[in-house]
Length: 606
Image 1 (cartoon, rainbow, N blue to C red):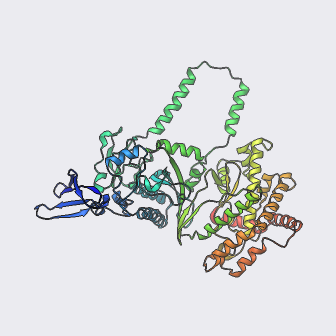
Image 2: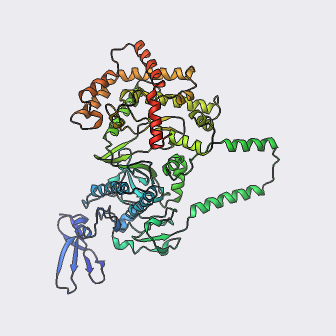
């Protein structure tokens, strides 16, 4: 028999305090901490009963109730003791032995994200939606850190969520739905099941003695140890300040804090400027001054200007490295080892199973072209289906849509707002090395997505669904209409893929060598895809069986038409002629221009 220490806890109902007595040696079977007993004393002292600590803690559990600060608490008591705190600081591993539910907090966390999306859909006004999103994320942040993770990235690495900056969230541009983007601060760990969650940190960077585990602890925070003494101010969540200090919100209180990072950054700039002024001045010629001013004025902006009509454009166009640095410097958890910032789009009201199918097909084509050494470039993004009408999507960072590029050019008063003008402004002269590299990236990615659009019949290809990243790659998003489905089931877009004069102009024109290289890449990619076409067909056939997805409305004809587009009975010469014909047909397509005009007049998409 094992010897264990029995811990008795005396609870005084008047003082509502718990006092632990000295351990008493007792012979018996070995029990985990979840079997430790608690002795209840009523005010009269005549009634006593013993329950386990896990049962005692379960009295305070409120799964999914964001107002308690314990919505994602599983009731685990294995990481609460002083020895566990020391062990965690020593980077040692701890094992949960109390058998508390590990998946319940995660399910509640995902459910909370979807609930926020459903609430935002019911708000018609865009500005009110943005304000409500900040309030919802601030309430969500009351319950972090917790032993929860982003399932979208869980297969890549183990991590725990420590914070969600409320003011970094933004509503994406959508006419009927309300998808929103948020950035999640996480800490990468070696083994998620064996390591305690990070302790709650205040904005001053101080760490609490342990993670708050009850609603009472939220009100008993020790502010004397903080570098900044907060002044409690009663406020509604709609008036949350933009400084991002959200970790110490306690129900209806919002604590006003100083925004240190921006001030320090400005002081740093000022000090550098003053330091430069103290150095001996160097003689600069007038021609050098004129040249520097010209280069400064002609340099492209890294981030699009903020627009009230589409606030997500400015957020998404910010360079990822700059965003990462800015969020980390302002975060109380930024100094932790393994800190990572993960973006995610939460979408409700749409069935993402077709998006998931498209993602799997793109991954297969990417692997095929890599295997056959074809230099085509795709950017599949992760999709997580939560339910039949909700899920998560991985955002494409360092990229903006062609619509946003054109809108930004018009807002700046540029006389010419073509895609080639944007390339010249961003990457330099037509014959510069940077431009040629970006042009090559553009052609490789454009050829890849043209083949994807042809093989699986991707529709709804307006300029909001086509992105351009900072290296010149074309990236297609939103695969809601593939195979036998199309917008309003009209089948209006009849061309094999979208290939406009603007796109060809970036390649150098129809007679250029780079345009000829584009067609060669398409031919090589089609030959490689035909060689491994069974991998694509088996994937679609598996999804087709018993499916009610709109892309399979055609029934058996879906598989027959998909198989025919691989042209397994064609010679390489006939495939070459087929590619030339598809390129010419797409370039001269009237329906492509009409659909772009339709999107412009109905949705304002340039």
